[in-house]
Amino acid sequence: MIKLVLLDVDGTITDRDRKISVRAIEAIRKVQDDGVKISLVSGNVIPVMYGLKIFLGLDAPVFAENGGVKYHESIESFFSMDKPSAVFERLLKEAVLEGILSNKWRETSYGYVPAKGEEEYISSIAGSAGLTTVDSGYSWHLLNKGQNKGFALEHLKQMYSLEYSEILVMGDSFNDVSMFRKEVVKAVPDNAERPLKEIADYISTSDNGDSVAEVLLNLSKL
Ligand code: CA
Image (tube, rainbow, N blue to C red):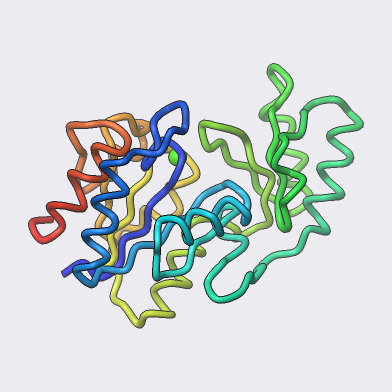
């Protein structure tokens, strides 16, 4: 039986243009009322995730910066900004990337847009400094090692004393791969990237928020 659902935000509970799905919100409320914990984990920043938790009325923690920062009763950062800052400043000087607006509120990572053809160079510099990079489909992220959505999954599993088989994860892009562990139940919207579809247990016939509603309202059958 699924006791916790961990959802990506952009492209999963929102459409491609990031408008949130009313059907997904309704399904989230219903499933939570039935006793299932619903958590969100995103590459976005903590002020956004703080707002989503409050306005959606979520009981479980939410995670920003791909798992690096949690908001529950208070805000908790699990990683440092030291290495990401040093590498980001260097790459900015080299003009191989541009920062994104939400960096103003980041605590453990940077979002960036690579200059044309510089994706691999940026990732190699990040790697040699002990950092990682990932493309969410909306922007690239410069992250600490071990800072990923899988980290958020482990945190929640421990917090609620759950088995992996009691957790369902759902996401559409490369930064969701780390939470698509073998032992959890994995669902994807039809708009998901191919590598996620290949390892998913359930591929929705619909996209974005409609797929979230479809999955959540059929949780007992998955
Ligand atoms: Ca996404």
